[in-house]
Image (cartoon, rainbow, N blue to C red; front, side, top):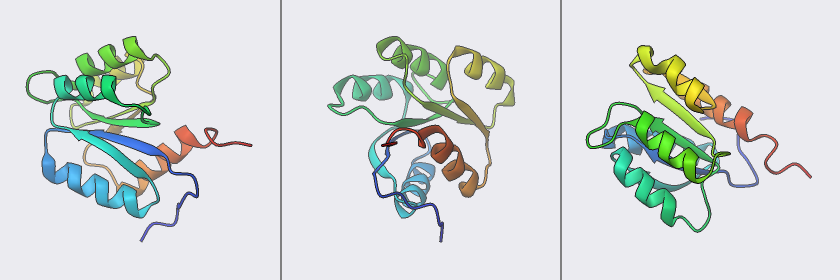
Length: 132
């Protein structure tokens, strides 16, 4: 289906309160050769899981509007733990795009977006991770 397959597994952490979207992202990203190392349904759980990861994710796919803790607040906490974390923000709320990017997101995808765009964004962010 998608042609961007990696030999080195890029680790992805999916944070979205819509579990149907989590599953869709997971299926598409696995098929493209990425490894899904975890999911979270809100920002609070995302921060808790991030702290516990032995191997940190290469990319976090972060939604904004979630219960308990939103994506911006979760991103701020995660970047305080590890400021080089690659966070791709995905939201239908275009009003937070500039803020997300200013606060440290490395990319912003406007929902709804094409899955190929997500794959290309992750590829562009991670292309130097396994350079020899």
